[in-house]
Image 1 (cartoon, rainbow, N blue to C red):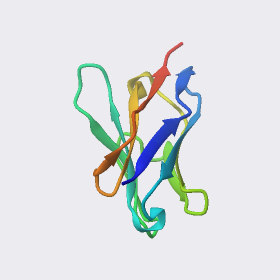
Image 2: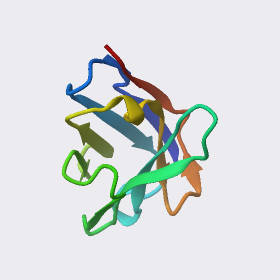
Image 3: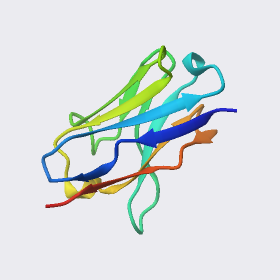
Image 4: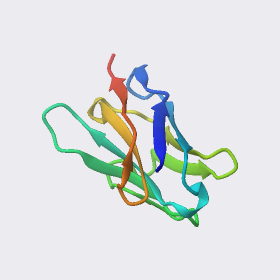
Length: 113
């Protein structure tokens, strides 16, 4: 069983930056793929970025060039660096592990002036 806890969300102005963190416990961290999803009010949950156990990354077109996903196996952490934030990035962001078998509780990101 893997537990995931997100942090780092908050209110930021358009054009600003935030770094989300996902702390994992349990399981064998280095073997798992991880991802970040988000869900805006009234919309379906969507995939933002993924990172494999070998650190290969993939991004939704809407965040390419602005967001960066990374991992630190020694600390059992997954990060999402978000730059040039836009109001449409406002959502609850979720960390997932092992192909969606594990989910965190989510962290709110609000981009507004």
